Picture 1 (tube, rainbow, N blue to C red):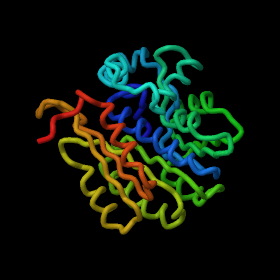
Picture 2: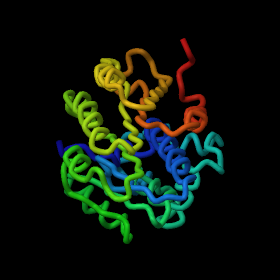
Picture 3: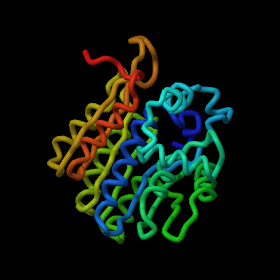
Length: 266
């Protein structure tokens, strides 16, 4: 579907959870002095103005990254904070990096990025924002693109799969594509983001992935402090395949960053 535009939701709590984890993964994988490939299935426009009419309409950035920064919850030495500073230096105060920009800022000059985006306006904005010798922008279906480009060169790699899940069948599609991707490119670390909704639509996807005998699978979820009858997202989830050793501590830090926005444990 081509109706979804992330500008309405950029900088929300789920973004912070996903982006803090992605930033930590990028640094973790860069510890080895070998180049890698970064692939993303639904790249969006890479840079977002948190004062735009879209962001103002939902107020999700104000309740998300802007609140967390104001409260001092984002450690200044965290790689996400680094990515935000670099983005504001390039674009101005109040601009926020999407996942492609975070990857480009934190990975090395020898690393190669392949970014898929099908929405025409988002694709055009992505091309304007992401320029570089090792950045390849693809206007194509993200799932088809991941499988068609795998295995890339270099073979070390990180994949982010984070669709909008506007179509209910997309949850199981993500699981099937991940399994197929691992068969084609077993060296890749794959990070899947998913929303936690009241209907629990993510559970069959998670069950299929956990039953697929994939290596080093790590599942992490956070629940937001919302009323039981509040519509929309209740939390944010991540599943990693081929999770690097020691990444748990980095994910702990990403979750602590959300602080008072999280629901108390039952």
